[in-house]
Length: 599
Image (cartoon, rainbow, N blue to C red):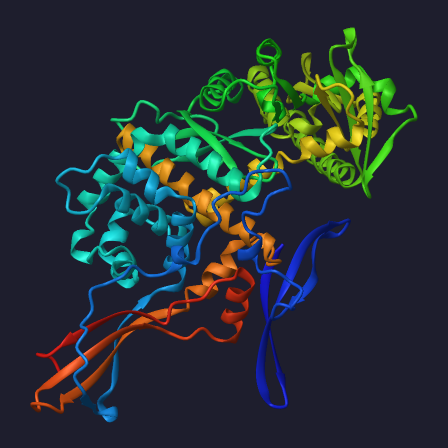
């Protein structure tokens, strides 16, 4: 669910309001509906701030975030009480900066305790800017306006109010410091992951018994000669021309990240399972957790590894394995878990595993349409191939078989529907030396009609009914959504770094930005604002800071001076409603600077 602003005119005046909108699927495609119109909090409602960090009865109460996390730091300000005469006609506004989005991100960073953690992990040295602060700049930039380190140093940081929040002037934020900040951050990856697991557990009561694991890839610009992990492999970004690395991410059933690992770009997904399982056990201990994996991860070796470690699993299976359960597809005993989804359990051989058959009406229509389209194209291609042979244009038997093979490869979904072959004519029929013969397979057509929309899961869980098993597996979409947020909202791709450690540090910063994203999403869900942070961040980004300059003259000695008040713009009605739901108050003023020399 996400926020959407609606505007209307009433009595000749424009009005705007927020609504919570939900996307859902229908037989005719995706649709949207309004779940609720949002307004001021009712007296009986609690803000998301008040709800954040609450725990079940009997649990120890966590350190709840205090409002000071979002207050600007104290500054040394002029304290003189000298009366002055202000000239209202010469009051002006200068030095406007982006405030709302970076202020929110800085508060999230402190809410997660990352400022204190990194200050402890990274020993202070002779650096002008603490490395914990540099890490915060990198992560907040990735959260608010993802781009390169060069963009941060030359453009973004100078436009924001982070100087007032962090106390770091723009001239001290340059590419060398940002690159070195990446180097300082990377060695503490595991300690950061353990800390975030604990802190997110305090805030949102994470259930880590169900682990969702998936792999994606992200590509590079450049040759990356200094990075042995940069290899060519299966690209999820449709960029097979570029080198890439693979990223394996583990999330909870709510999508909160627990950890990740970086692999070479040519690694097969199934080969990453032993490493990721060992990494999770090293960080969080061995426990009888349930791993949810898609069919690309499935191999008998991996399943045996999970069983040997006392783990449980719910995994997808290759489509070909569905053949072994053909008779069960026509049997009774299906249970409906959703309007278009039916499931049923089938005992596995030996009783060690349980198989779950699922069939989807929407998926059946999609696969049927795909089969029909590929069959039409395959048949049209065979006709063209046969016409070329009959006209004598195709005379070489080897060439004809290669063209037939490419045709089957292109339309592989329908290749099994035809029995096609190239026959050499002896003697030739005029100019025709080859004949292309094909016919349809009735058995393939019958199996396709039976299996369309069906898929098979396997698990070693016992005592779990079919609907629960299916729902647990379908939560794997949370890992897929995490990758989509990394790539679309946080712009993890392309990677411009060429060194292996810099690449890993870049991915770590993206991981930290995703943690901020999910923390805000969980906070919004508690506040009844949906779970899509982008509209909220964009709305708060309209809140600016600036210097209100008051030209003044001393009543005591007549000296001219300028009183500079660094203030924050007043939120409008829509912004106040969103902030009220979260339970936040934007500071009215950041600091005061007096300038006697400038008028």
